[in-house]
Length: 330
Image (cartoon, rainbow, N blue to C red; front, side, top):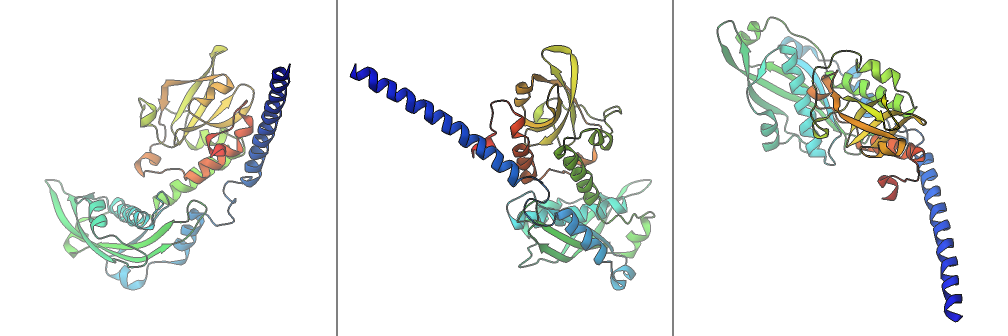
């Protein structure tokens, strides 16, 4: 009889523990949803997009550099938890923009050059020299290309406390090479435009909307690329998901990065979840439907900020049946 009493008491304690755990998990979920009520303003800081946009508006190329055939471009980076790595990536993007503007080809391994002599905000390597290929009707001609870093600023933003932006001027070392390049664009940073498009997509998804992201990504057009697997996906790639209760019914999804997708569901509207979690909503991903209708995100190596993806997972966690995301568990 004594053993039965002890067992009964243990069962009661176990049930109470389960109830308390469920309440704690429910509290944690609501806490994170309140904390990340607005993913782009949750930390009370300005976005890197706005930071660089202001820098572009404020810092026009000066007369001296303009008169000596320089063009000015901007770059930025937030992807690494390291200021030096983000500095390298930001300068790389600014220089690549100038190469695109001049319609020439990069001859040297620019990343290796920057890595060997890294630009740093606190100990700035300001000038580099690389080689490009100028196309002609008969052959490719090598041309020396000069790079000067005018600004390299580390600034905490919503995307990362290690964000960096840079302002760079570039020119051909010899006037003869400059004269051979007939057409020059003056786009200061195409990557900034890509960031703006991506932020619009992520903001719309945050507010449970997916129709505008479809338009931005031109998802009704014929795809340029058909990724063969999940490892080949990049931000903005789209896909179909099956309703496994009605296999003839399809739902739309967008890949956001880090194994995370936004998708329509039969009963819960638009959700954000990890690959595999779509099964919680009665869906199966059609891996044969992967398609890329907008290539610029891949071309410029855009990656959605990890903190924003984590925020989206937290915001949508309450829609997942009997599930709390790994992010909340951490």
